[in-house]
Image 1 (cartoon, helix red, strand yellow):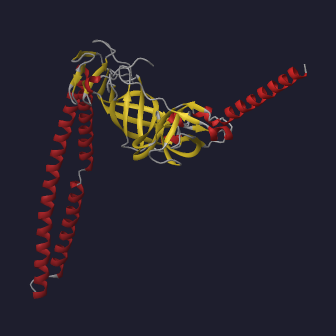
Image 2 (tube, rainbow, N blue to C red):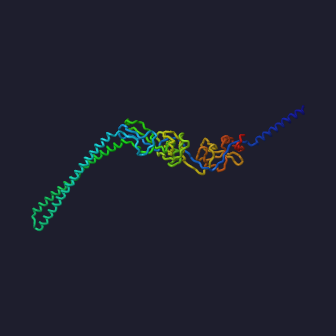
Image 3 (cartoon, helix red, strand yellow):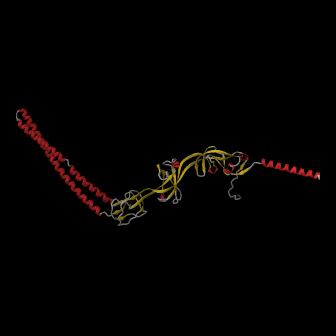
Length: 407
């Protein structure tokens, strides 16, 4: 029995030793983890500002009649393409034609009165000038004869009085030659003719711009209410997307920046440029209004529709780029990645971020070209105990070959 007891104790001791050895072997083993990784590389990257927008035409004219009269005739329909200066419609103009004819007669009468007054004044002025010259010559002659003793002082005085009278008559003729009253009447009559002619011309409706007729709400015979448009013409050769963008993003934009306009009405985005960055904030939304204009071939995009604008705010040609999925953001706002060393050991590395562009992000500090970073599994590694992380080895599965469906 003592021998059996000794064997049992020896077996227990041996089992304990073997267990300890096994535990030590397990603790010495290196933990491994399978992850996805990508390599940091130098590539161009763009900072894109994206916003929702509303579409507007390049130009628009809501044509309001300048006179109130029934519509006589339309020359265009909705969707008609027109050119600047083209006749679009006519209003009834008989009363306007009568007013024009009447005022034209008044102008002709005023012009005849003015011409008659002008001729009379010129004749009176000429006669007065002749009498003045004659009186002056007589006075000079008698003054000379007086000095020679051939004329009396009375003759000279009579000649002086006659000269004074001729001068007064000439001054009166000069004043009468000032035809301000007749000129005023003539100008007033001319103004009435011009006004009546303009009113008559207003009865013909023409297009101020090139474009397409988008609205024609009235019918022949109707009188357009005051202030209402008889026709609307839009230039749709280019489309303008107006977006409201937050101040911090709008501050990076400028006129001339490349942009695209995307909408359900276009199979592919339209290439355009920024044409306006408002210098003031919208008082209701405290955002900045930005316009993007793009050619609109075939009038594919329609005014009033919704769209999305993507504006290139900045481009870096040789940036260090990694996938955005590799980026870890801490609660304090700092950023890091899990860097894979040459020995496949993971290490958390602080980085500074630059431009973000969709699935990619620029790293301005903390990495160099060729560094490998974890893109799937980074968060799990970053939460490991530092001592365990230092012993961990990562494995990166190779992508399946083309046609291999074993995975």
